Image (tube, rainbow, N blue to C red; front, side, top):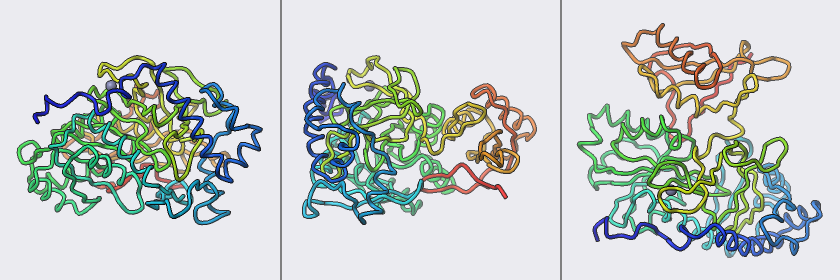
Length: 444
Ligand SMILES: [Zn+2]
C-alpha cells in the first residue's frame, strides 16, 4: 500500500468524535475508573478523608469533589507498604510489567502494568505515530532507555501496534546506532532531545550526513521538553533532515498527549484521560490560554488507577479546532515545563526549556548551557533565586563580547530578565544521553 492510500486517522471514530460525544464517553469511563480506584485501600482512604462517595461521581462536574493525587501520596504509600504501596488494584498474577521512575525528583516510585494497561499504551502510541505520518512500511528504531523506564516500552508497543518493523536499541552505543540506521534504512526513531543532539554530534564526527546517508523521515522527541519548543524542534529537524514530533508523558500517564502532522501543539488523548488545568496555588480551573498544572484522571489505568493526578507539568490548553480534523483539545506548547525545574525570578516563571529555545535562535550558540545557582544569585535566607546567571557555550570563532551581549539582550527580550552571562567554549559542558540537568548548584 502506498502512503497516500492509507486512511488519515488511526482511529477515526474516536479522533474526530464531537466534543459532546467525547464528554459522554469520558463520563461513562469515569464511573468505571472511580469504581476501580475505590477497590484499593489507598483510594478508599482518600475518598473517605475527602468525604466523597464514589456513587456521587457521575459527570465531569463531579470531578472537583475528588481529592487530588500527588507524587508524594504515592511515595508515602510505597514507603509504608513496600514495594508497591496500597494502590494496586489487581493481584500480582495479573501484572505484566514492573517499572520505576528515575528518581530525579526524589525517591523512585514503582509502576505496575497489566496486559490491558500495555494495550492502552500501544493504542495511544499507534494513534499518535500515525498522526506523525508513520505507516506500517516504516522501519522504527527505538533509542529510549529501557532500564525500568516504562516510556521506552510504551514507544515499543506503539510502534509494533502500528505495524512498523521495530529495532530495539535502547539509548547509547552511538556509533552502533548510526550503523544500524544506515544498514536497515531506519525511517522513524524515538529518543530524548538530549540524545538527538548528542547523536547528531557523533554523526558529524563520523562524517555521516543525515540527509545523504540516512532514510530518516520522522522522530519522536520526548522524555524532556524540547519537541514542542519551536526553536529546539527546528534545530533538531535541521540536524537530522527529519520532522520532529512530541509525545510527552510520565510513568503514571504515559503519552497522554501528542503532536499531529500540523506540529501546532499536542492533542490530549481524551478517551483515555480527563484533563483539568488548575492554578498551582488556588487549585481552581484556569481558562484556555492561561498557564496551569495539568491534572489527569486516568480512564485506562488498570493495575494502578489514578484519579486527579497532579502531574506537576505546566500546560496551556486551547479550545480551537486543529486543522488536522482531530477534535481533541490542543496544548499549543505541549508541556511548558515541570514544576520542579521551574524557576521563579523576580516573579517571572522561567523554564530551562524556554531558555534553550531563546538561545537556539542565536547564531554563535555552542549548543549547551547551564543555569548557575550560587551565592550571588540565591538569597541565602529564603533560598529564592534573585538573579539569573547563565553559563553558555560560545561557538569557536565567534566574537565573545558581542555574543554575550546578544545573549543578555535576547533573554531580556523574551523574559524581561537581564542575566549575567559567563561564556565557555563549545563542547565543554557535559552532554547527557538520557536527560540533561541544566541547573547547577554551586552554593557554598
Ligand atoms: Zn491536529
